Length: 327
Image (cartoon, rainbow, N blue to C red; front, side, top):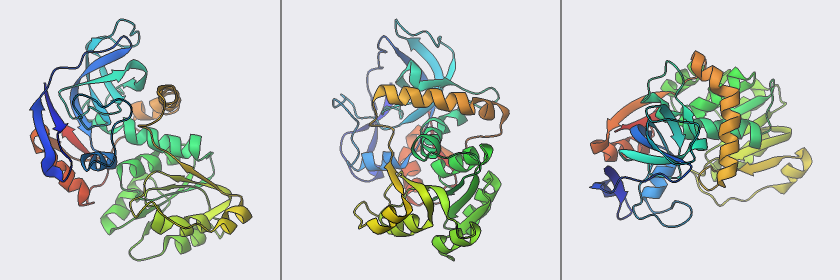
């Protein structure tokens, strides 16, 4: 099969397409004939050599944390899917390829009415957003949530999920175009960080009460203002560290407001935890996806041969929603 294999690390030019053996499914795995994979910021880090796949080093390091497509073959103990089924799946890697393996319990049926290619934009970001809002953030209907990078893949998913579940939602963006997009996703208040300070905007929007949950991708630069934007007993969920991972923290704020800080990442979690998350997400959101109340946001799709251009586009930070690599 054709696959993008990392034979060295660096810029987008290291994304080389090679012929490698087709993967063979284990007893509880399905092999997926890939329609599309979706880019994530983690792919950029892996390409640079900063985010290796967990566990034993693979024979071929193929990026890609989520795919959609059709079941091509199944292991001996697989009971949930049959060849020909349209699925979307969470991976630990291997998505930039014509075929990919997934444990059957990390795959979900593509919702009725959703094009199979577009379903590639669901698993990683929707599960991350769902986990941040509920399992890590402890959010509940009526809570206020602040979503940084609201026009990103995770951000666009989080705004929709939160709105559908009865949260009040604020989001931050860096342009007027992204501001308008976040209002279309369902945000109640969108803050352009280039023209106003999110801490002051949140205080005004919340009547000085703060927000209950913050989903943050920025890290160092936003830490203190995040803590000061939380309501008492609020939770900050750290999903990324785009501005840097080393930061000093005012523990007095944490103590006085009884705050919680959670980190989250899907790729490195034990299989059982990821299975439980997939099950919880499917139970809560399958109906929303099937009805179209919640949907993946697709910015653009690139053919596999142009995967380097897809990475360059993501690095330009212009995208609203997800970037696909169509196989």
